[in-house]
Image 1: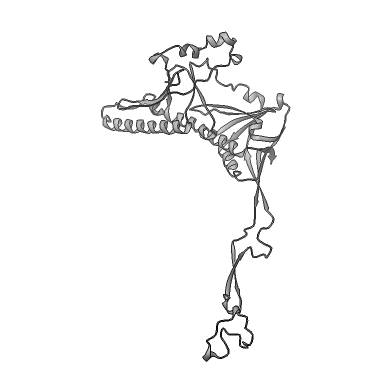
Image 2: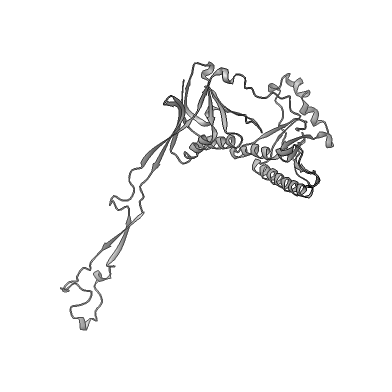
Length: 354
């Protein structure tokens, strides 16, 4: 079993690790000759099933195993992976490989950095005595006749007796050859066998009622987190007011406030919060609803005509909205994938999550 590769896009890999780390502590990373699959399944909260082509992150990619398609399954702790990748941010080159140390499997990240010696970081104080003018035998800054010094100073006398020489101090003109430093960081992993992962499957969902291109995830995350904090504050106030009556609280108990997310096939999106003492929402209009590709829909053109999103597109008014409720803090962590940039399409099923 072998895996090694140079990392062509450290920034994307770092952002991916940060996004995964916000949702769980451990990831199942499945590598084969074409793709890298990252899966996070926490005890509570949202699952992550991400697929990237190896060209997105790696270069000079080499993988070999006895499994079909040269597949290697690894259980990787996300915090150490993220820390290691962050240290490679300014590296001139980075590579990763699967290795062993004391019979323990490791992902070894090797970082190569180049530094140049400072060319103007030191000041040298040099003493420069005056050069005596012709006929000036004592070398002082005036004529030999101290009492009748009325003539102009000698040209040599105008020099500063002390001058600062800024430079590398090596006398070689400043820049030396670049200095290369190699740093290796080992991330402990666990190699998973095929029987260990064969029972892990991505959840199967029916065709979505609505699919919509989301606005900026950073903006959406900021608004969602603000609503969640408002709901938490409102709930605390209600609980204090009803502490002797046994009331208050959120739907869903200790899980926290739930955001209501709704979208239409006409470019509409709204995010809001509803509690006993608070009702607030933000709306977007004019967003894009990507068209379905008949080549990727079961049944082709007929499948597109029978698709739930096609039926939702024919609705108007409140009937055109697909509504779901999600735990606010968990939704905020999911939106952390916005650090990767790009466009994100959300798919909604008209159900209520308890």
